[in-house]
Image 1 (cartoon, rainbow, N blue to C red):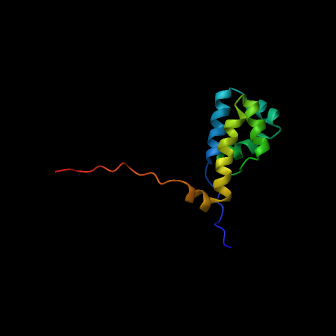
Image 2: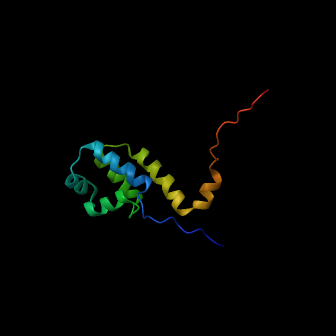
Image 3: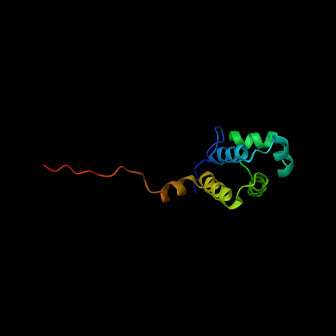
Length: 106
């Protein structure tokens, strides 16, 4: 069975952008974030940029460190994780977005 290749992490991922926004809103200094998550800031910066995809466990620790609801952040994580590991299946389950049809009457 042929599998589609995983998307590369060469550009910022949705989870990375969301995590960066959560951190900025928390007001937590970079040193405090690294200390409370148990990860170096280089790793966190790599998550922000999309060159690393965070683990589920790290995502929970990160949300708690920032004072965010970890359930919400995990929902974003699960969605992106699913797209990365099953891109073809994910595309088939989404409904295409289309503009409403307008009929012209004489």
